[in-house]
Length: 402
Image 1 (cartoon, one colour):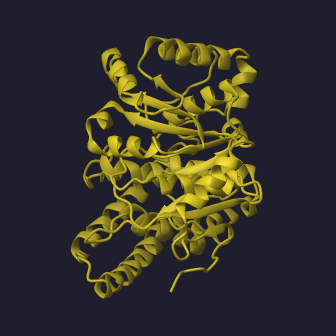
Image 2 (cartoon, helix red, strand yellow):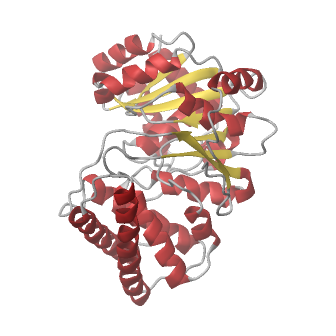
């Protein structure tokens, strides 16, 4: 039986039956004549050496409704940047690569800092933000979609389904988040399953009703890296540069638009990409760093919304989270059993214990400094402070791509 239920306060678009990819793509070709689409690809040079990216490029070659691709390349030398340009030349439509480590882009970041605007450290958040700036400067696209470059199971239907709700003028949506199953011979997605969902529901018990928690709990996969939005959101959204990016983006969407204009869409039957290691004793690496950053992002968003945190509240939260996470494990064990999946309860329990420590660490950091690391400022603020910055960025990117 197809799942057609609408839960939460956002729109959920399901995969019902076997929708025709050809129909969706032909409609997108027509819609994109009036709402041109830009695709943002944040990538490290190491991903050019892995097989997943070639598979993505092979699929993108067949896409006819994307107006431009902007790939932000991180941690690459000038020679590696040249190789990346040669690699992306396979695509038969416009591709621009932003060389994050190049001298021209570094000068853009230096200009921002001289004007009191920090663009964060190197990472996916900054890569996405600088790509948005180039798209705004170029002025050729009304819709921006983004996905990662390490998706092993990528096919172009993912992109089509992600774009469709925002590009279709008959669906009044400004932001669309992808969701999917993360299953091989076992369930993956531990941070969503065992941290974000139980933590969100624990906060609802401890803090009480809060609109942002209801919004966050409406997403089936809030940490999905794939989304699509109107370009106006790229102007007004501030962006976390760290692992809090996905939750931070949702917080900014919630802040700027009604949840009635937000949707999530089933983009794949299954999804596989590289996995982060759980280094329970190292808060600066792997899933632990990710979890701490995510928790801090949630706490900051709630604090900005008027929630008053205290040591007592955080102690209650830790206990409530542990109980809910343990109850959640029981549900997943039953789900694994009926589907014949591997389920290591000991490893799941260890993950929950590590995530509880992450909550404690994030709470301690938040109480010491509630403002935390500043978000990257939105492009409206940046262009107000430096009126010519978008033209500077456009010129730098185009000179790099000659």
